[in-house]
Image (tube, rainbow, N blue to C red; front, side, top):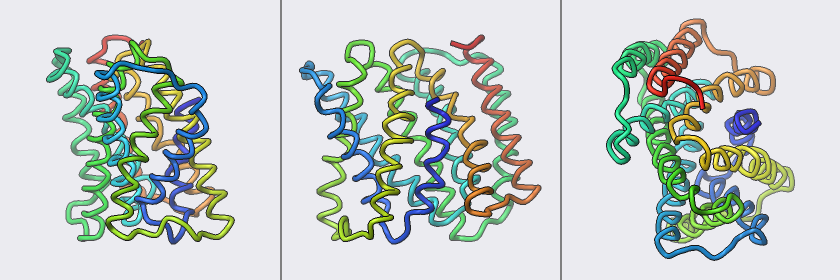
Length: 271
């Protein structure tokens, strides 16, 4: 259910016109923080600090990824940002000591040429900027999941989901003010899309993944997001008439398969 919800994120963001990525990220996180405020409970100082760090990763992830969608296609952006399981696996190895299995690297070896096919040998500067932003978004969401896994073992889903979104919104607000980014004055249909983004991909999607973090390793939860490009690509074709080229589609499929192999061989079995 969470993966289905997050699959709509890129298409909704693409449909929101005239709103800066910083403002989209701010309203998405603030709305959920307010909605879940009654569920928040007191936590330790240590967990508050970790949630603040996780919120910073979330804020930066959204900003980078939303910005990438202004430069590259929905499929290309979601595939690149969905390389997050790779970075999650490496972070779990470096931070938590969960050493990847040998065939993990085989999956990555398959994913790399897939990325090359997806992006093209010589992408334009505009596309290259989008690629870098999407890849950065994947690295940041990996940090978000790894930290969230640690905190969720002690903090309830309502409290965590509320506070991590509140932290992200609190970090984004002064950045919006400092950069003079417009954050209000939108037409009514834009507010409807922002509300849909908060309720669907964030409230149901991200929080569904955060719920699972208490019971599953961060790599397990993060790996499920490799299914996001499939749903996002289908929605982009149906709603935005954004059809991938055969070569890009092949590259995307190889990349997703490679990341999937890297996950399954590293974890051994699901769950």
